[in-house]
Image (cartoon, rainbow, N blue to C red; front, side):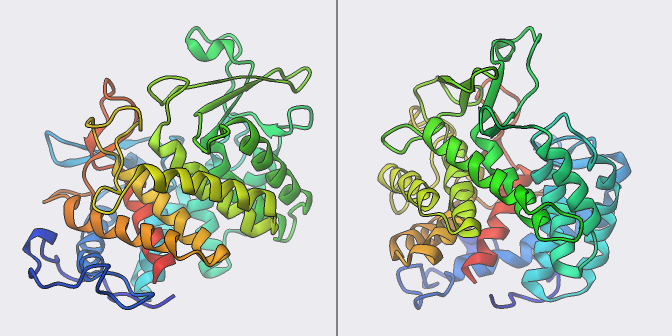
Length: 393
């Protein structure tokens, strides 16, 4: 991976202001990023610097942009999204080679240490993996936090179901209360925490097997025969029997929530790489091929749910998928996946950079159109954009 645009830089011109003759993905040499993508990176670094230095992690972690105010809406450190902002800071340091990012990233990572003993959530990969996990890879520090968090996450694994329970739902009054053992596709994104911790001092090597088995389970239950993904797979915890597919985030149980499809591509590809598992690589290919069949050059950013064409596009889904496609391209040598990922990054850089405000990308969807986080900047959209850039470089 090359170093891109050292330092936080000044503001880059908005993509619309780029010269008309700027090279596109079709013109760029094989392996190169389109100029439109590299041109927005200084803007990303400048906005990250401003937010990291101005905000206080004790007051909350950036999650979504308040469209009216043009400022971050923050959430407490126990929110599932808290790890993405420090994760971006670690990625910025990796991409630029500028050590100034380390202090910022450490400042935003340290408060997350109080989350590592939680056993009430499957989101420890998002929270701890993207913060302390990144710190451990970058500096060697943070191994204890990664191992403790993985041990906490492993308590949610059921050998009967052969999966990690995503949500504790028994007794809830909402729809989820009837799901005795729900497995949401998002959970495959948290497995990398187990993989990393399994190799660290004090870690349990069996955690890697646990992660692989969870991914295999999801690949046959959350994934439909055609390669599309259902958000929720429901199990009987007593017998391990698969009960049904359902949805929480998608439009309906039979539809395909676009970020969920992205989670599947990314998560299955990652587990296939770590485990060297051909079954999971085939699942990632199947999910990726479905994605490619339902997006096209110039419209790689999908609607929030594929059953809702013409409704809000979701840049977070596109960024997640692009990162996963790049991982899969490296594993398979299939140029289609890299080409689609690069086209996605170029589309995001030319159509979806926010004209101002704290986030780089606009037009993300946090939930459903009736929710508040719709057509706004989201911290995880920016995170996966930078992760994809790092993988493409």
